[in-house]
Length: 130
Image 1 (spheres, rainbow, N blue to C red):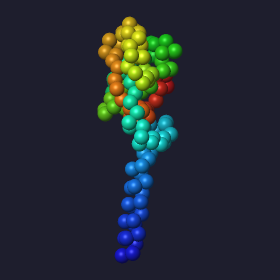
Image 2: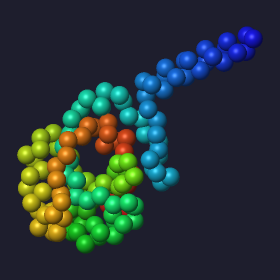
Image 3: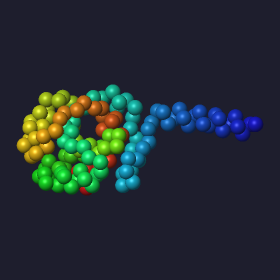
Image 4: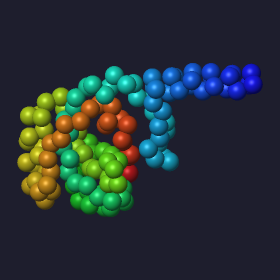
């Protein structure tokens, strides 16, 4: 009986610790990252270029872009899809010129989205250029 009580107390302590700090790994190639909960409140804007079903497909489509643009593109897991997003900014106006640039490269559906620092760190998969 005492073991059950000790196990229950240990479980409660571990649950409380886990709720204060999230540990996750989004990809077998990525290391676990600690993301503070306060990052959920920090708003960020990013330019979503495209959404595909796999990392490989996104990388294949994005390979036609110049290297200086590709190095700023990261891939994020969003539900069942992989979203390709360019850069990040604290104000959406900072991304307007890039939206036009990517549309000129053929990404007609590029749009600016509002997210949080936590979501960008939590859902990160890999970089566009591998």
